[in-house]
Amino acid sequence: MAIYINEPAHTFNEYLLIPGYTPTSCVPDKVSLKTPLVKFKKGEEPEISLNIPMVSAIMQAVSGEEMAIELAKNGGISFIYGSQTAEDEAAMIAKVKAKKAGFVFSDSNLSPENTLADILALKAKTGHSTVAITEDGTSNGKLVGIVSSRDYRVSRMNPNEKIANFMTPLAKLITAKYGITLSEANDIIWENKLNSLPVVHEDGKLHAFVFRKDYDSHKENPNELLDDQKRFIVGAGINSRDYAERVPKLVDAGADVLCIDSSEGYSEWQKITIEWIRKHYGDKVKVGAGNVVDREGFLFLAKAGADFIKVGIGGGSICITRETKGIGRGQATALIEVCQARDEYYEETGIYVPVCSDGGIVYDHHITLALAMGADFVMLGRYFARFDESPTPKRTINGSIVKEYWGEGSNRARNWARYDLGVGEQKLHFEEGVDSYVPYAGPLKENVDKTIAKIKATMCNCGAITIPELQDKAKLTLVSATSIVEGGAHDVIRKEKDGSDR
Ligand code: RVP
Image 1 (cartoon, rainbow, N blue to C red):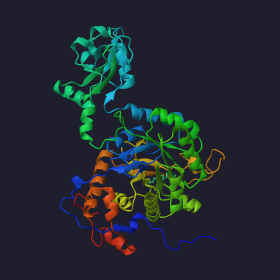
Image 2 (cartoon, rainbow, N blue to C red; image 1 turned 120 degrees about the vertical axis):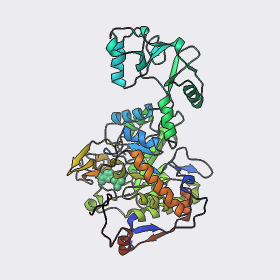
Image 3 (cartoon, rainbow, N blue to C red; image 1 turned 120 degrees about the horizontal axis):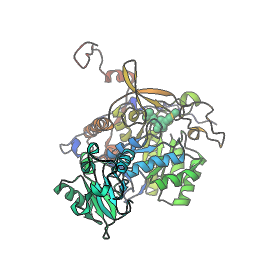
Image 4 (tube, rainbow, N blue to C red; image 1 turned 90 degrees about the vertical axis):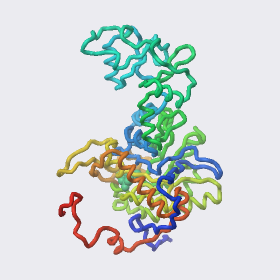
């Protein structure tokens, strides 16, 4: 017999937080938003944590390499979209990992026998203005000098001039020995007013560079999410079809965490995918799974070994799954039930499996609500699609600047593997997503900083300076439709921001 749940499933918009006691020690500056990304055992630390509880959606219109770098700089991570060839996805991952915030292996190298024309051609190709000059012109040859834009003037020099005649030779360079720490390297850069510091091995061969601009960027981004080699942390979407070919390429390219991207994840396909990963990589490769909307779905994926579990079906801004197929559940209700199952599973097994609330975040305070309801982090598509760093161009529509944003289940994305449950044909039979515009909102950092400020302020209203404390102390209330109206400005004639009438 069918099971009926006769209580309506609710969305974030139907809840509010009731403030708790705020001690004077509870101020936004003291709030930490550090949160686990992957599962861990009681008493142990997760192998990967986020510094802000936000990840960008596994979508063509959201998570390319530019988004991944900028979001990792700000403490979250992107999951590069899997609806492209495994090679292209791996290339994006490799680009993010190459953008190191520390010791940078030189990708611009020439020998003293090369010419100014070679320097210019290389600069045009890599965009980098510091070129290592090594005896054999390789990235780990014996260092003999460097060329930066200070060393030549194109208008006054012959393009055939040999590099040996204008480079800054080794004798005039300040270098550091291999083994130096990043902070020692930065001290040398600082004391000597350098732009770059070559780090060389005992035998004089080049190891890497440390750049001043990376140090400056680190100072501006204290939340930066880096791996143990100071490279940005990045995730990658996979599917439950071509994992045997895709996963090795992504792992080789340096992906830190994978996520099975599916509109409905309570399926044997996901279990098989996780088993394959465990068989070939053990626990070394981290993989999230989903999406589910109830306790059973969560327990199934947790027992299958998922490193985190995503919640949400049909709540995404571009998603029409509920209309098309009649499946889904109000995001708040789904999240609350799954987080309760997560806590019980933790009690029983001592294994904490982080929960990600995916889709349907409209206002910044929805993020705080999701965290209060038990989410460890949230995945956002529309939110990030609006920023400079999303992969889509800006457009002007009816005088407003917008960016394009389309669902992975739309014909445009053709992400058949996300929706097609059977082994079937490689095409979408019907659309589950729309193609749309979102208002352009400027740079990621500006927006994320504001969102984070709001989350921290609300956490202080609830007397919490960590996410677990918020989850413990939060008092949430359902609101009536009438009181939702009361929550916005009402019964007044609003002025425009410049003071004029609307
Ligand atoms: P939102 O942040 O509300 O834009 O939702 C983003 C989420 O929507 C994604 O992380 C994904 O789970 C879901 N999605 C992506 N494409 C589609 C679709 O075409 N239906 N849905």
